[in-house]
Structure formats: C-alpha cells, structure tokens
Image (cartoon, rainbow, N blue to C red; front, side, top):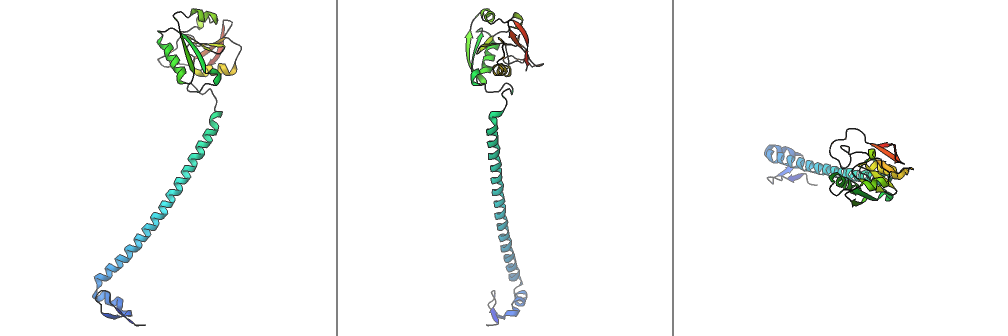
Length: 217
C-alpha cells in the first residue's frame, strides 16, 4: 500500500502521515471549511433524528388523547339514560307526559310564553283558546285562591298556572291520588313570566278542593 496520497486541494503527493500537517500549513482555510462541513452534516443528521423522535412522541400523544376521548364519550353515553329525570327545566319528558292541553285566553301573552316553554322542552302541546276559563277551572275543582291565568291538562291531572316542568314530572312519576297541582298567581321569574325568581316556587297539590304543599322548585 502506498504511503503517499494526493492533496485534495493542490494535488501534490504528500506522505499519509504528513497530510494533516500539510493541510494546516498550506491550506489552513480549506481544512477549516472541511471541519465545518463535517460538523454541519453531523448536526443536520442529529437534528433530523430529533425531529423524527419528536414526531413519534406527538403521534403517541395524539393516539392517547383520542383513546381517552372515545372512552369518556362511551362512558357518558352508557350512563346518560341513568341520570335522574328531575334535573331542572331543560329535561326530556317521558312518553306518558308528551301530550299536554293548555286552556288559555288568546290574548294572554304569558300563556303563550308558557306554551312555548313546554314545547321547547319536548312536550306535545295543544292550545285550547277560549275567552272564559271559569268552566274548565270549576270542572276540575280548582279553588279560587289556587287559580292562575291558564290551565293545563296532563293525563288525568290538571296543572294550574306557570308550573315548572320538574313539578309536572314529579306528578306523573309518583301519580298521587290528587286532582292536580297549582302554582297560584303569576310569580315573577316562573316559566313564561318575566322578572327574577326571588324564592323557591311552592307548588300545591289539590284534592277535593283542598290544597296542601306538593313540592318546592
């Protein structure tokens, strides 16, 4: 094997052991450029490897996050039907409560608002407009002190006034031996009424013309 090599810059034959000294002495700039190029290549390779590892980590994180999301949705879907029905106003009525008749005067604005409130929450509402509601209220035995501006009929029960949905659901689920329930007057902040709710609404149970407290909402 020859102990001489040609200089890559000037082409002069130089002993292999003296090549480094030759480059430093004759071509110092070329040697510096070669070191920079070699170092840059290594850095570029190192950077590429790092980016590869970083991309793999991002993919792993994305897969884990997706798995957690799917699991959460699955659990939520399985337990949604087990939630209690009396969760407030925005609830889905059971099938036996779907049909509601609302007896009201055609010019009663808050009556129309209450009707819309029932419809927004999934009830199948049929308005019964009439100028005089006294016959309906008398037929169900609603005392004058318990009366309001409209009367709803749910199954065999009457629901007098701006009664929140939670009380209606309680009535249908428990099916007590009463004629119906009432929120007398037109309290501010009740469903269909403007204003702010100042205190829990007291809903009364009525049986044979006698009123007792049914629930508070």
